[in-house]
Every structure is written in C-alpha cells, then in structure tokens.
Length: 279
Image 1 (cartoon, rainbow, N blue to C red):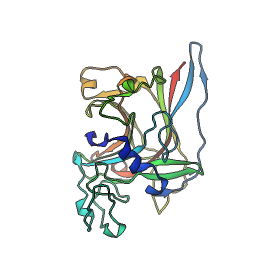
Image 2 (cartoon, rainbow, N blue to C red):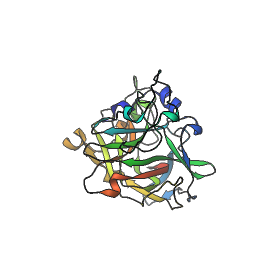
Image 3 (spheres, one colour):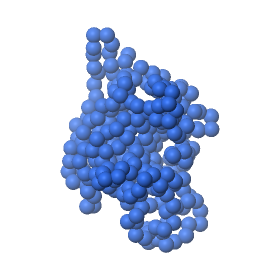
Image 4 (cartoon, rainbow, N blue to C red):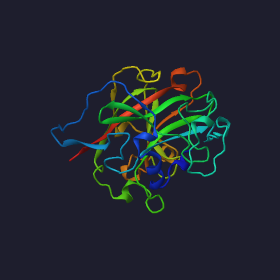
C-alpha cells in the first residue's frame, strides 16, 4: 500500500527541508515529557527519535512525509488542477487549484505526478517546535487511507531496515511515545515489505478545526508498549514477535471505517516522537 512512499533521501529533503514549504498553524504550547525511569531490574531511558516536524529525525536523519491512497491506489490529483505541469519536480501555482471537496486530504496539493503527492503541513507547538500534521482528511469509501511517516533510512537501494542501518540504540526498546491531538489512527512499525507491519490502534483525542488555525487545545501523551503491538500481513500469519531491527519505517495512518464520522473526517497533529529503552 505504501510502497511508493519509500523514496530516496534527496527527494524527502527537497520535499520537506524548508519550513516555508508547508502550511503553518499555531495551537498552544504543551509540556514536554521525558526523563530517566528506574526499576529494580533495569534503568529505562528515553531516546528522542524525532522532536520537531520541520527538522530531520534526531536519530535517523530522515524527514517526515505525507501520503494518501484513494481506494487502495495512489490518489489521482488531476481532477483538482486546472493547469498542466511541465516537470515532475514542479509545483503548480496556487491559481491552478480547483475544488478539493472529494480529495483524500484537503490541504494544499502539490504536483499530481509526484510520488509523494502532498505538501507536508506543519503546526506550531512553541517558538522552536512544529508538529507534523495530517490536515483535514476526508475518507469516503473502503480503501481510502492517508498517512504521514518517517523512514529509518535514506538509501533504500542498499539498506533494508534499521538493523542494516546499524542503529543499535533501540535494541532493548520497551515502548514508543509521542504527543498528539486529533483523530483516531494506527501507529505502525513497517518492514520493507509494505504489507508486513506491527500496529497499535490509538483512540481519538478531540476534533481539530482549522479556521484557519486550530483551536487552542492540550496534547495527549500516548505510550505504546512493544508487547501491545499486533502483527499484520505475514507478521500476523506467522505470529512474528516484534523485532525493531526489521523496521523500515514508522507510519501514522488513518483508514476509512463505515459509520465512524470522527475517524473518516478529522486531522492529526503529532510531535516529540520518542522511544524508551533498557540500559
């Protein structure tokens, strides 16, 4: 499903390295968690994976990206543009934009020929931090999905996963944690094979209305123990235990659910993505 989002690092950098490339919104500040946790048997410490949505991951040096699927296929954005695009890298002028009522994501669209399709949207958390935002999705039928993600490597031709990347600091991970507000979603730790991933269902934490900025609101800290991750694809079939070395990407995905209005139309803002590991 998300095969096309694993693009080279140069593309990700072009897509997301400048804070001027995305829309920006400003909700209130939120307190930052973290700290060392001690137990009788081990010391658990936090490791920052990605704190600021406009900066590359502290641990992985890759950028967040945004993607959408329409009925299980990359969304065709041609109906939403009245101007042609001469080069794949080019972004259509705003004057070319037409009505987006039926687009999976409602924020400003980019080049319909681009494998990433959508501008990354940023939301101001405090003067130094911006959260990655999946803004105003509109899922209308089975197979509709939208997500933002974070790859664990930039050279997909030679590296398959975080193990081959040589990142060993997460080897004794016990949980993931991040701060969010908005719609229900799945947190996924995906392998190189797009159908195989571990996931955790995260409940909604309010609805976000951009008018043009989200209302002032508090962020919720979600902690996801590794033991609570479930397998999908062959990981489910084979009851494969979680293995961080097989991770190729992290995804925060929303998908259509019949009769669930809050799930099918909402937004999501996230920042301060962390792991807790035993030392």
